[in-house]
Image (cartoon, rainbow, N blue to C red; front, side, top):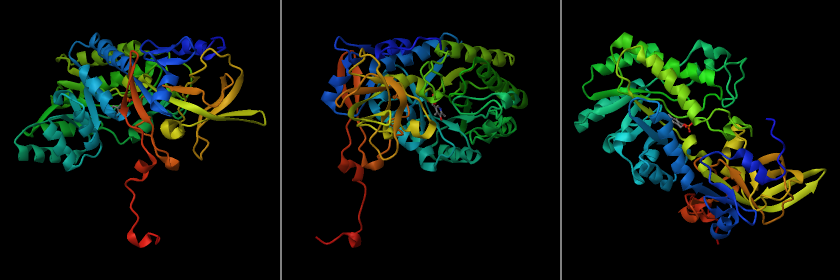
Length: 468
Ligand SMILES: *Cc1c(COP(=O)(O)O)cnc(C)c1O
């Protein structure tokens, strides 16, 4: 907070860099990502362009395994939440690193196995799962995280038809009166409003009473192997204390369920939401003081302390991180098309749009925007960096930048998560290509859409076709 104002992007990057980044600056003053210069990538693969650093991705997965594996006395299964970025090459790298997967629905299950997956390490989530989806989960042999009462019957029926037992977790809902006065930067909830009522009102999971009834019911069903509990609340807070209360409450709920039903889990799946130092979703450019090890320390000690009171074996820890694993591995590159100056304002207009970073429009996310071909040029003016679409499409409002000109490259950091998977074709814009960079090499991992692709699935009924 007391950092001196940076004079150029190189100084800003020094302040922003985190351990697993591969962001650097070459002799010509261009930003490099995993050893490849931004302008080289744009020349070779076109603009705008999503870029993924393989080195950062691998470091992040290993870091999560290490941070939790070193603190948890039982096996840890890091299941990548594929919704964060469903590129098949990303999934293949996760699998190569020993990571499992979390998927929502048949589409993500399909993608998970298309790129390589061990069924023992995969879980399917969802508040509504169709019979077809449950069937697909059986055929792949993955664990199903139950989140509806009638889902139990659907799963049991599928198990009888196939003559195999289903492995299931039951999703819990965690609430605590302490959250009446706890707010969240991520959910945009003030301390006065408090998170409690929102947590109760969320569609996810079962409360203690509801879960106890379902645990007893499942105990009488030979078709089901009830492996444990699942839970996910997302990126909850950047303050240690409420995080500690949250995970302690989860542990206490497992113990209370044991007291009521005699059931004890083999697996506890704690979902995703690992905080990061640089977090667009915090709606601020400030670094989060809480890092991975700080978070893992709070989570593991709060959970273990609560679970140990039951005097039963500690369950295996499953987790479903999305944003942490892929977030800072991604950079969105774009090219300055025109610069307008009027009424004391400067608008740097890029060939990209917030179509490619939808979290700006839906959640007010704040991205760091760097002049990728002028990292050492002095900051000289405040400018707004905007996109091509008919909405304001503001990537960054009133940021310090060097004087930019058409042809300059601009980089948005931390775009690996919820960018490509949430992107749109608004204004008839084709979606960008994606490139995987790795220690100086670059490979295309998703083709650029064409305008023909955008309209490929449209049909004009014959009666509406104009003659000639
Ligand atoms: C979204 C989601 C995740 C991933 O969350 P991150 O915040 O990206 O880590 C994991 N599990 C479930 C059930 C989810 O809905």
